[in-house]
Image 1: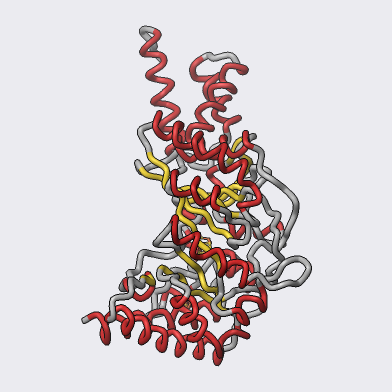
Image 2: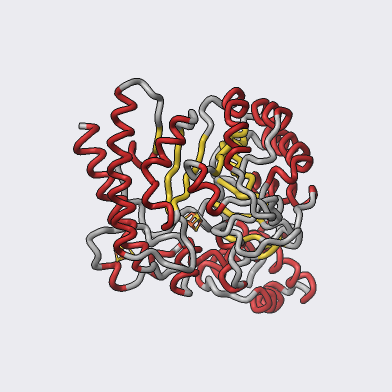
Length: 408
Ligand code: SF4
Ligand code: SF4
């Protein structure tokens, strides 16, 4: 190989590495180092170092982030039986770990505005950490010409005025978990000693609304609460909760076809109330009712534009996966403190390649369900259960009714 000067030499090495890694996506850094030694007469130690740097860069260049879920703790002050964190521990995230995670997101963001969701366990158990990392992230984002949008998912029981003031100052949107009236809510959302929590949260709602007039709430519907579903929705609206997410409680136990049908009929009844009250001027918003479903391909944002970080710094595509009992389901790709292997995200980025054959012929074109629910129900992240198909059918039908009967 003819090399006329140092810059030629560097250019040739760079071109060679580009061509080689492009043609051999599954290359081994050691093989690359050996080639560099034989072709460019670099010492084996230097070649290994160079191959390592290239490998790390290529690996990390496979991240295209827009969002991150920070699991500040797996601990919770409640013991809700349907919680997606199946393994409750007392693990807490260290400040240094949270900062590493935030830096990872900001360094690998492909959008100017990123979203960080504070989640757990109960994230408000870690209010001191929140107060530490929010200003850190704002400053780190400013230095990179980016902006952080914040959200927090909470059971609401630990909220006080000082936390609300902090959230207001830093524009942190609350998503409150509340399942409707006292009976439905207190069936599952209990303290560790078995006491209900509904009254405590309801007492706090006026204070929360003072600081967040658009307070968001999630109503999780269990199979046992199906008979009360419409009434539960009405109770939430009466409490002044107008910005709602309604969704079923998923778990290892699947819903029967009859139960999903009932859920669908209840949603149609809720749809009726929703548009009636909107007509009368109530500022209700349920995203599912407002937007036509658009097919955006197979798979969700997990592992594509979003990652989740556990209290110990472990990184996975999604918090719901991190919460799984079975370690194989968690899909850990490394740790923010020690490095991650972004190549392990390939199945999530190209999840369409793993679409089951029968889905390829299905006219419904769903997104393939939630990876965590799939894993719990079928043992395979990429294999949706029948329950997923049923819920998808219901969602489509409710959206069609919303669009055709109410929004035209
Ligand atoms: S609805 Fe069911 S069968 Fe159809 S694409 Fe989705 S998972 Fe596959
Ligand atoms: S659908 Fe499931 S896996 Fe995907 S982001 Fe939502 S919770 Fe996570």
